[in-house]
Amino acid sequence: MADQSAIDRAVANLHWLGHDCFRLDSSVGPIYFDPFQLAGGPVASLILCSHDHFDHCVAEDIAKIRDAKTVIVTEANCAAKLGPQGVRVIKPGQSLELPGIKVTGVPAYNTNKQFHPQANDWVGFVVEVDGVRIYHAGDTDFIPEMKELRVDIALLPVSGTYVMTAEEAVEAALAIRPGLAIPMHYGAIVGEASDAQRFAQALAGKLPVKILPKE
Image (tube, rainbow, N blue to C red; front, side):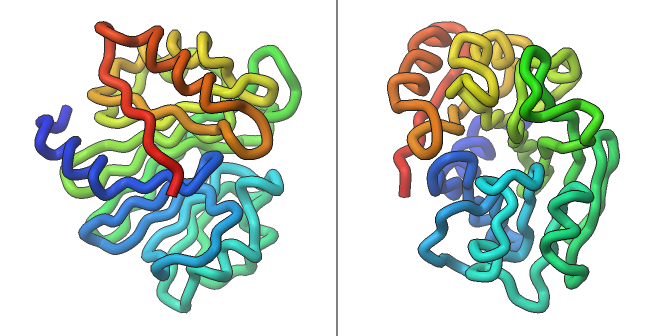
């Protein structure tokens, strides 16, 4: 696990842009997770897209932050929408080494609903950069594979309906035991700020949680 100062630096450079979308301003350049409803922003060094649903794999949003040097790591369905330039396909369990960064695909699927079938090989990501391991869960329920993760920061969906509820996300966070948990997947299509607050309140005294303001 990273020391607290490394986690603090990463969080200071992590921006929640709404829904499941984050930008990490890292030493290797801006890293975006699941760009959605972007007004613009710095050109990405790396873009990570968890699956091809309209709120996670958006060619128009990606075009706003993509240039000839941008690398995109995603699963096969989303890759087919984005064209070949700079696109790398990953499956759960696979890793890619890029300059200054390692990206590992991890499983992301539903256990009690059919929106995100396990057979689709859609992914979450563990990103190792600047001395920290950041887990972006993608759209998922609390799944057994989470118990094997060793990460410093966990970005976890909390809205219910298509993903974990806040209460299920609490179970996931306690299984993962990250240095810090950050709620996501609320305030846009489904989910309210109260979901993030319930998540944080349930973990008070058990695990550090930070609710990022939307930028």
